Every structure is written in structure tokens, then in C-alpha cells.
Length: 428
Image (tube, rainbow, N blue to C red; front, side, top):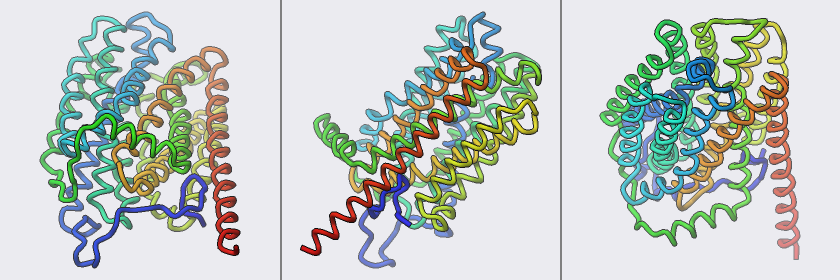
């Protein structure tokens, strides 16, 4: 089975290994520092997703408080993810100069500081602006984390290590929504996002204390011309472009579903209270398991097989969620979450392994596409819900899933054509 998660059969490139296993000082499971590193980045993932999506489960309450529509309230999420997408590339360039750990620390510090201001927003416009600043601050973390792992972890353990970081994302998204749901039911949405801010502060402090100092980072100069050249190189790589498209399309589904689901569950025939709606996000635990298991899926099925499994699972969940049975809707959310996190872990780890230079920029471009997908999914999902109800949101998700399939099939066709050309060249 070809190695590339986009369906291409090209061999994935990794950083040159030391001349002998004994000389390889990169981290590996069971080795010194690996557990601390994994837990530190897990906590960073928790803080990132808890902050980034802190208002998502609270959108009906935000709408009611400020007297705005679902599509307007959805911008409190889309502004954060959109700003992250715009700033992830320039901040990743700073990480090449000042270091991954420094950039991740600075990003979390600013983001948690803004998070403590969010509860005091006097209007929806101010709330959206603060959320945009928060998203821009968080932009320094995801790509730097991926680059840190690619430099500090042995290649065979990379998929599993990135899976644990993505698992932290799912835990953050889940716990943030559950906490905000119950706190908001008792004290309102402002108290709920305030609690998320305090939790993020604790995660940020623990992250900085636990994360080991990098041993394989080599700082580079800050050069806009060099950055542009690196970006052009990555964007001229068909495999990387397919991976970027896959990440964006998967996140379009996820952003649409979880932006709108709160509105659907507050309406008939469900009419659930805010605390119960927040508890629905316990299904994120499934994402924790599926992202952490991504390495085993790739070993057993290959990256293309793991990706097809993720796509099928997501599509099945979307169709099940159309039911008027709460049990089937919950099962649909479980499948959507499992498929999304598995697909994201496979695609993001493939980006980190494919790029041999400018890893932070390669990961930044993936994160940019990924969060643009989230922003588009949140906004378009709310518009589709307003126009056609939950079926409209599901229709948008199905279109995105078909996009993932098309990109993967296209990659497989391109890989086979490349193999045929190579055979012809060798036979001449």
C-alpha cells in the first residue's frame, strides 16, 4: 500500500538519520524525556482547542444575549479560526528564528491573557474582535508543535507522537464544551468562557515547565525572500498540496457540524438544556482514541487505506445524524468525530514527514488550510442551517467528504502515472 495519505505512492521523506542508532539522540517511546514531552504537548493541545472553540457550544446563548442570528454568532468561532489560518505562516517563520518552544510559550501566554478578557465583552463586535486576536495568538502553536516533533522525535514514532498532540486537541475541545455547557446553564456564557480561560492558564504553566529543551533545532535567519521561496517549494509539491486540501475539507465538515449542532439540539424534537448539550461533547473521547490510534491504522492499512476508512466513517456519521432519534444522532456524532480525528492525524503526520526542509512552514500551510476549512465550515454550516435546517448542514458536509475522496483518487491516479513513467524511463 502506498505510503502517502493522499493516495500517492511516493515514498515519504524524513530527516536524515544519524550514521548509527547509538548516535540518534532523538526522543523515542520509553526513552528519557519522551513522556514529559508528550504530556506537555498534550496540555498545549488541550489549551489550544479549549480556547479556540470556547464559544462554540454557547452560540445559542450568545445569540440570545446580544440579539443576533446564528450566522452572526458563528463569527465568534470563525473569526478565531480564520485569524489563526492567516497568522500561522508568519508566526511559524518566527519559530524558525527564535525556536519552537519559545514561539509556543509566547502564543499560549498571549492567548490565555486575551481569554481572561473575553467574558467582559460589551458587544458582539468586541467579542468577535477579541476572539480574532486570540486566534492570531494561537497561530504560533500548532505548526511549531508539529515542527518540534519532527525534529525531536524519531521518524518511526512520529505518527504516534503527533497523534497524542491531536488527542490533546480533542480533549481540549471536549472538556471546554462540557465545562462551558454546565457553567453556562448555571451562571451564563460569560462565566463559562472565564472558566475556560483559567483552565488554559494552568495548562500553559504546566506546558512550559514540562517541555524539554530542544536538542535538534538550528535557528535560521528571518528572510521574507527565503520564506517566500520555501512556501513556493511546498506549494509546488503535489503531495503536500493534496494533504493541505484534505485537511481543509475534513475540517469543513467538523466545523460545520459542531458550530450548528447546539442550535439543532435546542430545538424540537430534542429541546435539550445547555448543560446536557455541553455533555454531548463527550463524544470527543472517541476522537482522542482514533487520533492516538492513527499510527496503528497506518501500519495495518497504509496511509491511503486509513484515509479511506476515515472518510467512510465520517460520511456514515453525517447520514445517521439526519435521524430524529437522539440515540442515532449521538451515534452519528461519534462516527463523525472518530473519522475526522483519524483523518486529521494521518494527513498532518504525512505533512511533517514529507517536508525535508522548512518543516515549520510546511506544517503552517497545512494548519492554515485546516483552520480556513474550520472557519468556512462554521460560517457556511450556519448559513446552510438557516436555509435548509440540519439537512442543509449535512449536505455541506457530504460535499466536503466527496472532495476528500476526489483528492485521494486524483493522488492515486497521479502516483500510478508517475510509476509508469519511471518504468518506461528505466526500460529505455
